Length: 158
Image 1 (tube, rainbow, N blue to C red):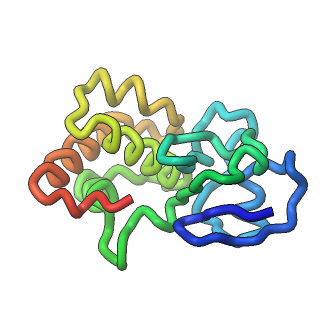
Image 2: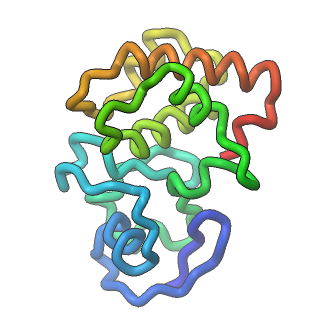
Image 3: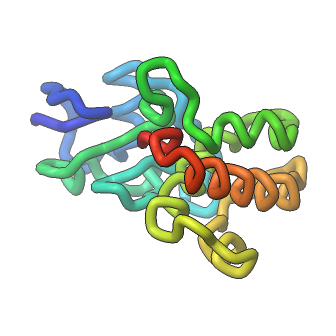
């Protein structure tokens, strides 16, 4: 089956009902997307499907045919970090780091749809779980990235 992953058309051998997560990690060796719970509750596996944040652990790969999959590996552009990645560092968001790729992908989808989100917008969109409890830092980083993207729109490539 053909998939478009991070802008590249790839041919994969996988059962149609295999979750996208396992195609990304085990077939394509893109290990930035993490397995957390396997029931779409935690968000560690969040990727974009046609620009929308989705939980890849429960979504069959057949649902991705003809659509664009974007993973954390493509969040930066030409080696330049996305504004969110820079904000994540500036706000010291990561603790253990396990949930961060999913958090960043959810935040990128949020900023694409709401370039200047309110706290309520962030709280509604960021349903990812973080055992370290960095939610206040996540919110601050999203606001910081939104401001940076408004000042320099090319910093939010993905």
